[in-house]
Length: 204
Image (cartoon, rainbow, N blue to C red; front, side):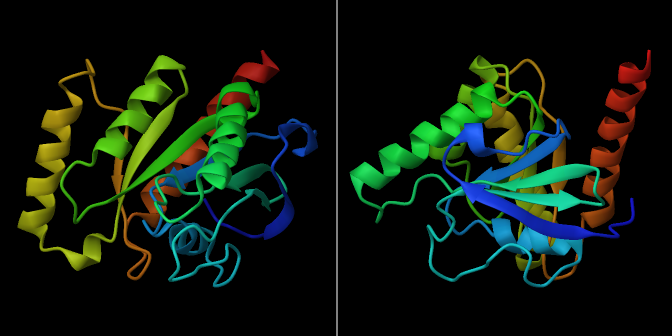
């Protein structure tokens, strides 16, 4: 898939204010500082589409970006930011939960995971919650350029083992690097295939 156009559309905390044109949406979420905005910018081949920050918890809104005038990337606030106040965390959790469970246009959530870390309880709990709510998701391991190939495979195996304790099978898994652009083609092709399959179904 070629990215010809990527533009910011709207930020909000209310799903009633999300775009109403019925275009398909792909959401990106993960623990704070997992490299979410950097990954979105890499996928869209834009330096400053999603705002990046060295400070965790920067994204605090639902951000919609229209891609090729055909579908949306949705940048969601990171979860598990310990320094945020309980009130603001509860507020984020409420509108993120509403968006993920009620937004009919949402077809896939990319759950971003730092490949350098052992399986984290907060990531596993979030993915289990998605499973319980029947929200389709894929796992994207970020920052693979920071690890050797053998260390990466070791960590992926640990995640697989942990996931299979509660899951019959794993969701789609991608590995990526915002720095080297590794994984870009596979993720974009995955999105393109879903778009084509859904559009074909609509024609029937």
